Length: 336
Image (cartoon, rainbow, N blue to C red; front, top):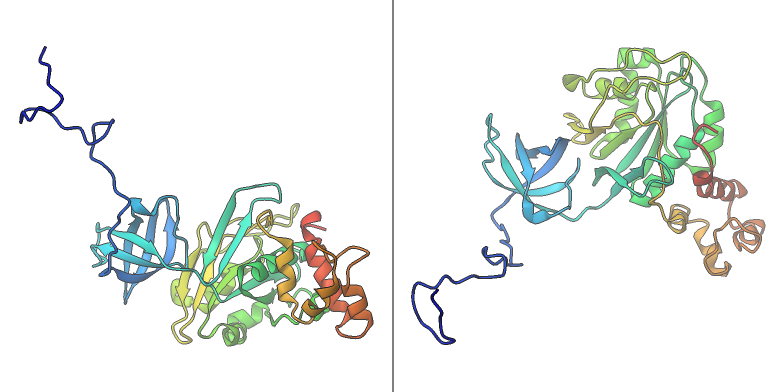
C-alpha cells in the first residue's frame, strides 16, 4: 500500500474537491443579461407555454430557480431555443418581480397555497343569477383574495334571462364594485361581449367562478378565435357543472390590447393564506377610523373604533357591514 507524506508533490495523487468526490458547487449564478423577455400563457405538467415577441415558445424552469414556480401571467426571462418550432425547448432562468398575485387554498385549514395568476390587473368574479343559484359567500371570498392580492374586482352576472340581478346588486352595492349583467341572448348577438369589453380594455383580467356559471362561455364570446370547450350541463341535484377548463390560460383580446385569463371552475376558495388585517386596505373610507382601535383589533369586536367613526357620519354604515361580512367569511361555509 502506497503511503504519501504530508508535503508530497506526486502528480498521480487524485485531488478530491470535497468529501463527496464531485465538483464543488458555487453560489455564483450567471446573470443571463442577454435573456429574452416573455409572458407565461399556460402551464402543463412542468412545461410552460410563453409568449416571446410574436411567437409562442415551449419552456421549462431552470434548476437554478429552485422551488420558485412560474405561473400564468408571470413575466420571465428565457434562454435557449426561442424559435418556437416543434420539438424545441427553451429555459426560464428568471422570474421578474410580480405586481399582483391571486392565491387560494383548497379550504381554510389547508396550509398549501395555490397561485392562480400573477400580474393581473383585475379579477372578474363570474356568477350565475340562476341555474346554479348565486353563492354570495364564494363571491365574498374571491373579493377578499382580490383585495389581498392587489387586484381590482369586477362582478360579472350571467343568465339574467333566468333571474333579475337586483338582490345581488343590493348586497354588494355598498362595496361600489363595477359590474356587468349578461344574458344568453346578449352573448349570442354580441352585445354582452361588448359590455364586458369596456371593462377589459388594456388590462389583464383573471376570470374565476364555480362550475356551470357560464364563465368559459363568456370567455369564448370575448375571444371567439380561441374557443374552449364549455360545460355540457349542470347537475340537477348538486347544482354544479362539470369542470371543462382544466388549466389556466391567458388569451389575448386582439382589438383591446388586453388579456383574459380563463381559470378552472372552483368549488371552494380557501383563505388560509390571507391576513385579515390587510382586508381593511380595500376600504380607504374606513381606514382613518381604525386609528383609535385597540392593538390587534379584528374590527369586529366591542372596542372597535369603527363603530364610533361610522356613527359620527364619517362613513356609510353599509360599508362597515360589508367589511365585517368579508372579514367573517372564513368562519362560514361558502354555500351559506
